[in-house]
Image 1 (cartoon, rainbow, N blue to C red):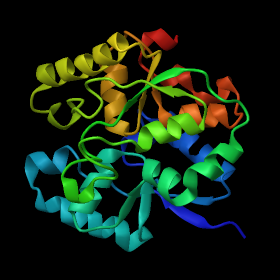
Image 2: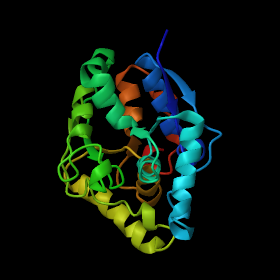
Image 3: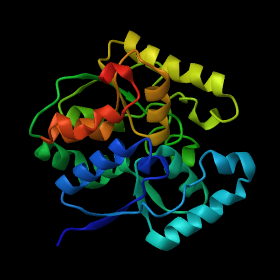
Length: 243
């Protein structure tokens, strides 16, 4: 019997970032997991709760965990909000590298990727320090996963800087500039694509830039696991480079 995990997609996982959830489920199932998709649970409040009442975060975290226990999520905002609200959550990247293990990931690779990939961490899975999924100043977990699937990680200056998403409702012009700077940094470092590990980060970089492809890291893993290019739903991205 396959082990079961509960996956919390967050609100954007069922709207603008459906390709992330789709490919995350592909990867988890390829690795032998039965996945309970928690698509009926409410938003974690990453943006709205912070603007209105931070105490909402605790109530939402309690509701999510009461329904599903410790959840896996691919959204750093959801991960951070649930954890800061006193709940239990595991980031998908951490789950794959630290709990499933890189050797198991490597064993599933059928088509090693030969791409120069800029791994973009963003901020919410690394700060504050007590909830960081890796060293908040010099994380390596993303690079380790990319190497396991045959890609070449590209170090770039903005890899742990904020994408602007958390301030996008209050200061949209500043947020857009921050997103543009992330992709520009990756491009100047010689990357062919940017890989994200967060719903909100992907939306910001994908929607506001057109310098280079911005992909969910699960799309790259699913491709390496042998899934067809046509199943990655690249047509759902905003970035015109992919069209």
